[in-house]
Image (cartoon, rainbow, N blue to C red; front, top):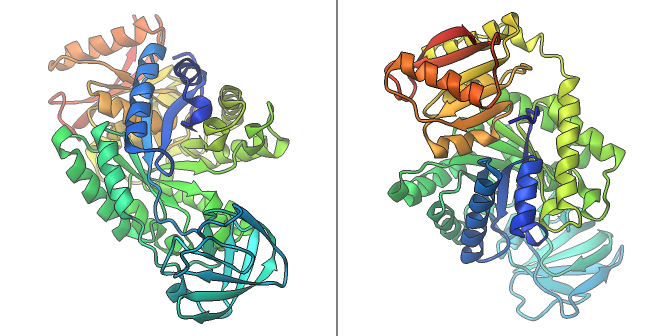
Amino acid sequence: MTLRRATKIVATLGPASSDPALLEQMILAGVNVVRLNFSHGSAQDHIDRAASVRAASQRAGREVAIMADLQGPKIRVGRFEQGKIQLLQGHSFILDASRTELGDLAGVGLDYKELPRDVKAGDILLLNDGLIVLRVEAVRGEEVHTTVRIGGELSNNKGINKQGGGLTAPALTAKDMDDIRTAMDFQADYVAVSFPKNATDMEMARQLCNVAAAQYRHKPGLIAKIERAEAIPHLEAILRVSDGIMVARGDLAVEVGNAAVPALQKKMIRMARAMDKVVITATQMMESMITNPVPTRAEVSDVANAVLDGTDAVMLSAETAAGKYPLETVEEVAKICAAAEAAEDSQQDATFAGRTFGRIDQSIAMGALFTAHHLGAKAIVAMTDSGATALWMSRHRIHIPIYALTPKVATQRKMAMYRNVRPLLMDTSADRDTALEQAEGHLKSRNIVQTGDVYAITCGEPMGAPGGTNMLKISRVS
């Protein structure tokens, strides 16, 4: 618990990081959440990887959260006879939903069979993350006839986006529903839903997760990946029914344009924090470290700016899943986050100007932050059953570490995503005074506080009742 870093690191598990010893090193270097990408691998692969993460976490002595990232709809071209083709500007190219033979220079089949009904003449289609641009000239039955505006290499199963959005593919496919059941079999702490368009998509995902997890008495956190243009107008409604969002800058940039993404990132982070939700910033954060041992200056600035924006977590994808330097990437991100946080101004946020709190437990949480800030406390301690008190505290920038003590492992893991929260497992007495003594002993044994230190602690009476935080105590360690 000596690492003074508030921003959390999400790392994607893959071939480059599956070695148990390396995974343990990555956790020790600063990984707080491990992402399992359900776009690749079988159900058993994910079950085995989740077990490996839990084992590595135990060896490292640090609980981490597991996030199951659903694939979502496959809006992709089919496969080519030679594996790839070279599209030239000005040439005609047909996207054919009825085609069964392998593709060639004239055209290719589609995994996404609804495309002919989703587009019309004049629409712009972007393939392979926007590197190839096609203009729709006509739709004839199942064939979408296009002209190549920007050419390039197009290989098997590359993604398709429509500029401005408008593809009707459902957010949850039959595969996603099966994958939710798999993720609940190993009690994933978070489920990330790909391509939601509105709150209804997230509500459906919530129902599926709750049904699949009921036998384990488990409730995962739901993360909405904001990567469709249609999701932007519904952002507030999506946030309301989710536990957090991911600023998924790849597909989003293809649909709304690269230039619009930085401002949208700031807007999404601001809105998530204001609504007491978590937010992950993702895509190409340290892309060059897939092949290079050091990041570019632009990548350093990108990560630092996300931290200064207030993101809970930054996410690594191919950098840790398939890159040459997974451990070094985690170490670099940890250093960048810590340096950016050191430059933050927490004074204004600590005043809570203009904020009103209608709940007792939320008011206690805010009172702890305000008092600890003005007293220069060494730590803020939240004794929490559900993690809600720690979440509320973490929505404000304050350079005092928040230690969340909980008797539930599932709560401890979920809080691994929260900015500036260090979750600790501790069984407490049902007696309030005894529990407070136990909490101080817990902190002292970990050298979090020492004799003479002041800390703020919140708890509830009766002890262990969710939503029952109703007490704030300021203590000096004797």
